[in-house]
Image 1 (cartoon, rainbow, N blue to C red):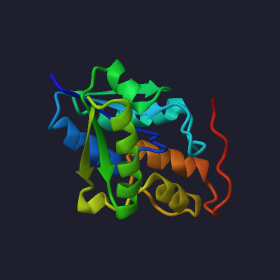
Image 2: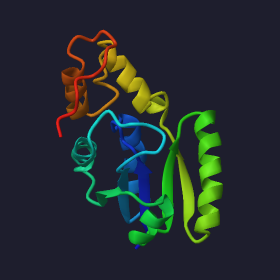
Image 3: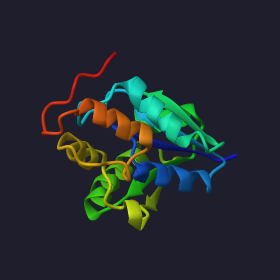
Image 4: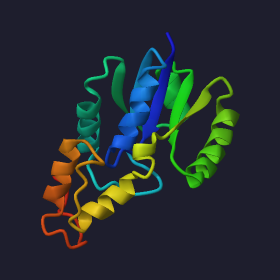
Length: 171
């Protein structure tokens, strides 16, 4: 049985993430979508519980996908799940540049774990979590970009749609 992990902050999960996870689930026996507890490069808009629940809801139709939280290095998370593969989605050239650097670091730390890249499907190649949050902040409709539960929560967070600070997350 080959296990792959799909790590990310999923803040929030988008239809692009679901595209990559779904396609990985059709290739590998088991896929573990790993939600990083405290991303180093940004402060999440959504609580950890929200991010996990959104991801679980969006992947419940995939019988071989599990969702877990991690706080360690990605390669250590992969080892914890006995995963041989890290799956990453690529949308644009800048994604490749970042992922290339991460791949080299991960290969140094864990040469036994391979990274596989899945090109985003054309219909979601432009979708990013940060773009979704910005559209929602200004009152735009994100319903076609994210699962319904995420769209609903974004409408709650930005009730006036004027680009302001979101309402605080409930712990």
